[in-house]
Image 1 (cartoon, helix red, strand yellow):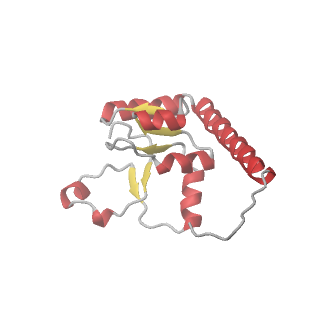
Image 2 (cartoon, one colour; image 1 turned 30 degrees about the vertical axis):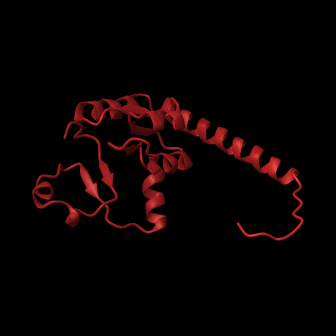
Image 3 (cartoon, rainbow, N blue to C red; image 1 turned 135 degrees about the vertical axis):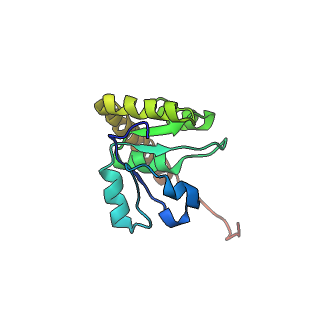
Length: 149
């Protein structure tokens, strides 16, 4: 409601909302329901940003990983875990409407910068993975006898 000029898509089911909430949805909020993988990927890749909010401590927001894969700017709930995982790549918000609206506005006002941050971070992660795979590939392991783990 604070950003009526922005269209929001939520991958959830309108019919699963509490009745009162379902009757009072803003016009700029679309519930997609279930999407097959191609539809989901298309929605994500065309998004201006991904928002992942939580009140739980110690959680890894999976939407952030998807956003990184697609090169989409990220808006996350402020948390120590998210900051450890993603540093300054996302815009961090408090779980209240004005902070969330301000975070969204910040991303869209500086879309190139936030897109570049995500793309650069993705490249860093890919290089780190390649280095670890190279280390594993260059290490020889000798097992004297088969064993169970």
